[in-house]
Amino acid sequence: MKLRKKEFEQRVFEVLAPLAGLQIVRGTISQPDPPDIVCDIVGRGRIGFELVSIDAEETRVRLDNMLATDEAWERALATWPPDSQPIVARETQDIFFVITFSNDAGLRDRTRALRRIQEFLVTHPGHEGVLPPEATGRDSKIRAAIAHRRPAINGPKFSHFSVGSWLPPQVAKIEEKLRPGRYCETDIPMELFAYAVHDEPDLQLGSLEQLQDAITKMLPGSAFRRAYIFDFGFRKLLYKYPA
Image 1 (cartoon, rainbow, N blue to C red):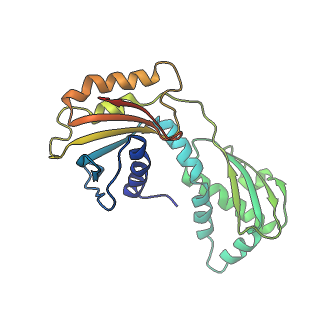
Image 2: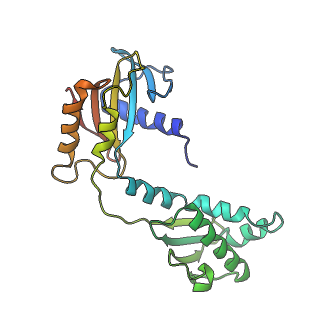
Image 3: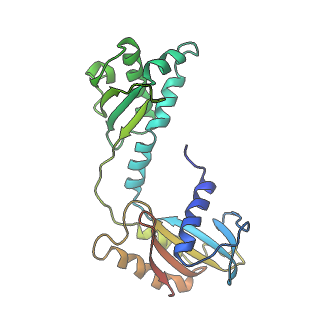
């Protein structure tokens, strides 16, 4: 289930804060937006934290699309008449999918394709192996094969993939947060958490340095007194300024 924005931000913050050596006082987190998080930090008092994801937009879209596959199946199932839904569920409860969509196939594309697949599986019970063109409507966005697991696996279960190359972190996202006057309405000390979940900020020579340069140049004129860069995927603090 996809988390709401505030739930996601709190979970991210609770992972990143200890990496920065910050101990959150239990029960003090609030989310006024802005900033994203306000809480008490042991030994430092009340601080506001703004979070910014620096993954490339293309990476986020690609992976969000991939993770939407399970939701797309449920949406497709919901388009059947109520008395037909148990039949579809029964015919697919022991199915394991190996399925690949093109990276630009969003929730609507996936829902449409999976509806056609459900129709095929209901009319071809027991089918196993690569799905034929009539199962996907010759949709170029999808390739799929299925296997049956017995006893039933409370399925269907998906093994889905999304392949893409590394993209550099978005320096502009940090620059926008550090723009003078952006957070002039806040009256508590603020710090900036910049993090990447998928595109490692220090994977290529010079990529982390670009982020560091933006912070050292713009932080003094911003609303923030400190900024951090994290690799969320590897649970690492990469940079803190001032140290």
